[in-house]
Image (cartoon, rainbow over all chains, first blue to last red; front, side):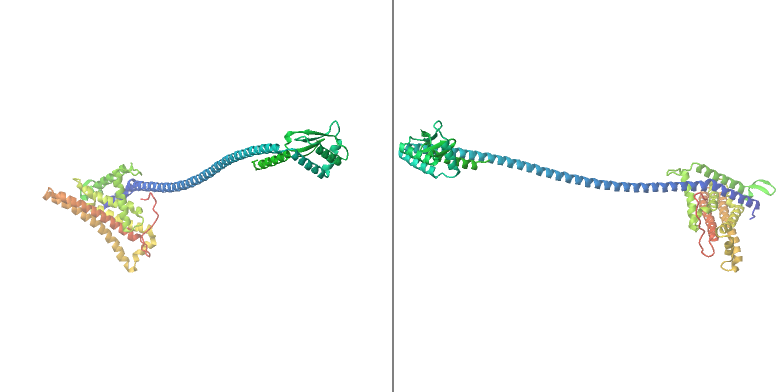
Length: 257
Length: 236
């Protein structure tokens, strides 16, 4: 089997040319395309990885925001609840205070009313008692009683001392015929008693005292001397007046302010 | 009956001749290059691509994977040579289905030329891989006594490459030719199919053997590791 060396040479050349042509038109373009695709895939994978990382980051951020939002909402809710609770307590306290005040007001009004009623009853009772007492004492008072009153009046006159005596003496001395000292009694005093009183007054004043005797049934029983603003009295009416004043003061003190 | 397409001469001027081997080689070259150029003209880097691009990518990446499996760690560096060897031998075998065609690899001249290419390529890749001295040193390994045997081995394996491919391709073509004259129906079809298989196997064997020789030459004397180098994205 001969070898044609020209053909060998030609085939060698052909093969070398074919190698170059295949490199130029096949391997290089195909490998370039594969490399480009691998690069694109790698880029896409990198993009996907970065997108996944970004997604994770955003998810974390979202979760953090959610958490913060939940916390904030819980805080606001708690604050609102606390505020509502405080407001409710305040309103309840206010309502309670208002109710207490109203209740106190009502109780006070009731008490005042009761006390006023009591005072009214007491006043009425006092008035009735005094009316009855006055009537009884008026019915009972007589000359004997007036005599006794006169004695008591004289004794009291004699018992006066100190500044009261000085003032009385000054008033008695100031009395004149034009403006005499006035001695009032419920009944007309007998002459003996008028003399006794006059004597006692003159003894106190140390000089004759112009004196006018008056009869005033309103005194019930008793004697009243007045001269220049000074007044000396003893009468059942005074006792009853003092009693009445004492009772009224007691009622006023017991009544609410 | 021609034993070799070298004998089918279309034109001759003295020593220069244009025989069927050269003509069919050119035809194959035109088909291969034109097909590759047409398909790679519209390559896309997107995920969706044409079936032809898929085919080319499968072929190219398959060859790269095979080269890598042999032990060459920078397969794209050898892709141009080994890939073209495989594609040329395979194409010349596949084209036997065309009536009137005679495979160039059925010519001892072609297989000798290819084997010579391997004979030259092996030391070239070996020297570029590990340097001239280291490569030359590999001939006196494990002892200088082995130098003649190593040289004989180089020559004999080149011869074996050439004769193996030639024998298989020629025999396939011869069998079909003989069977066509004896039983012109059916049986030659089966033998043609078998011939296709044989041709593909021979293409694979030729390429793998060349890769093995290159790998053996590219290993350094001490480490026994194949050449490793960074692969540029556009390297072929």
